Amino acid sequence: MTALPVVVSYGGYNAAGRSSFDQAYRRMILDSLGEAERRKTLSGLAALMGLSGDSGAVDRAVIDGTLIRRIEDAVFNPDNAPLNTKMEISQQDGGEIRFQVSKRQLPEDLPSGWQITELGAGLVEVYLRGSQTWFVPDRKSFPVKAAGQLPSGFDPGAFYSPSKSHPRGLQMAIVGASDAINALGIDWAEVCRRVRPDEIGMYASSLLGQLTDDGVGGVLKSRWLGGRATSKMIPLALNSMPGDFINAYVLGNIGHTEAIAGACASFLYNLQAAVRDIQSGRRRVAIVGGSEAPVTLENLEGFMAMSALATIDSMGRVDRTANPDPRLYSRPFCDNGGFVMGESCQYVVLMDDSLAVALGAEIHGAVPGVYMDADGYKKSISSPGPGNYLTMAKALGLGRAILGDADLQRHTMVYAHGSSTPQNRVTESLIFDRVAKAFDIYNWPVCAVKAYVGHSMATASGDQVVNAIAAMRHGIIPGVKTGKAIADDVYQERLNIPLADLNVGANSLQAAFINAKGFGGNNATGVLLSPLRTEAMLAKRHNHLWADYCERRETVREQARAYEALADKADLRVIYRFGDGMVDDDELLISASQVAVPGYGKAIDLQIENPFPDMQ
Image (cartoon, rainbow, N blue to C red):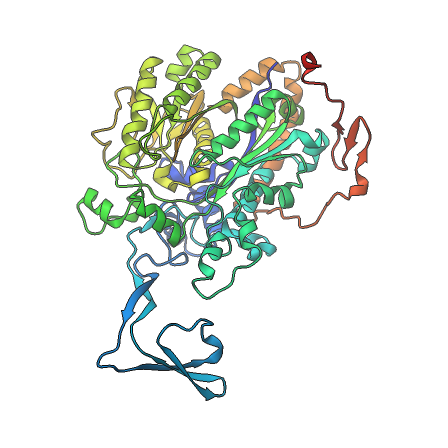
């Protein structure tokens, strides 16, 4: 039998809040919640954001300080952003420019036209003749005003002490992975006791690396700002580092590790690798995810130069106003003017179905397949191509094989890439509409969470996956509430793209199709089965074990709920084990047949069959 990769936990953070126990999802559908769920959501976010005091004022601060919003001054002031202005200086009437400076501050290679006079006490006077080129610190309004930032006041580095030397993206990786592991409700050591070390796999990456000043951003700027690069900046900026950090400081993983980058489809690329390995039997446990912190002035400048981002000018033209609201910049499938950058860390824990049942793990869904295809020959590396048609069609083919025609047509939905660019709204909606016609689907619900949290690059489809799990469980699909109407050029004969939250009924959806379109022709579509559908499949396969599983699951749920209660009070129980639990070389028990590693219940098997017997 083919193992079914089951989602047993998920966690992380984005502009809507914490992913575990659906806090971020609930923030997106806040006005559709009952009073108890609304209060739970607002109070949990308030704790995360460090807010207290009058409940009305705190609620307002939570609402204002989450989701896409104006770039906060802690990042940079978009109305007064720093830059250097280049100036050509020349003297009039043969005059001189002179100034005094410490001798230690003089450049080693004196510019042409500089003359130096010693003044003593370490000072010199500089005389300038002729033309000079100066770069003068300046401030200027920056056209990009909005971003999907983590909730205001939430500092991921404040939750573990060694974070001061870590770039923001890696701080997010630590707290995001900790959230997923804590929400599992099963002690990680117990998971390790059930498997071989090489049956655990880490599949995580970032796309852009660590762009902040303590990562590659600092390396690129230090020389030109008179500073110095440090020994940590380059290694910590590697795009494999989110997974590396989690292996080293959260899980102590010595098994498989993999970091795949496929532009904006990177999360699904990593998910595909994990699903492949679990179905083949190579892995029994997989942690899939990514962390991206791309909201920096320099990165935004680069994407703005591509005419990709929503700016005050582009949104002003759309809204016919000089002051468009930054909270409404991201409008997938509506009249829009570019995408909004977001930051996010998302992690899901997968197990094969047999291990999940044996451990009594909670069932949040399953991933039976992920498909990836490129676009082929292109005129422009940024233009779309046929690859996404292939991934969507194959994903629906798998969905039909598992669900049957009736459930595929009536009880599924799409989580769109939905980047909020004029090109995407046309090309992606056409793909969905044509595929829906091919499979005889009408009124197909489409969700686009980038309307709430922006585009988090490598982690974007992770934002979609965790939201889809929640939407299938609760039955409310977040609408594109930032737009007033679906754009005229959007194809929607067979689609239902709601502008308000769409209540389809709890547990009525059987599956969601997670779509990602990446720069350069990186397309991916994943099939995500609902929690209820997955449980029904597992109960059929493991019917003789199901009663015992349900009993064990109650203990797991109790432990998970205990963590939720703590997390809602901002007690995040971040896991950071620096040098703790290291395996000494002498502790490895190596023979010709196996390698036994302390802490794992099963040894690594070295009795490997020859995979090429016909060639001997």
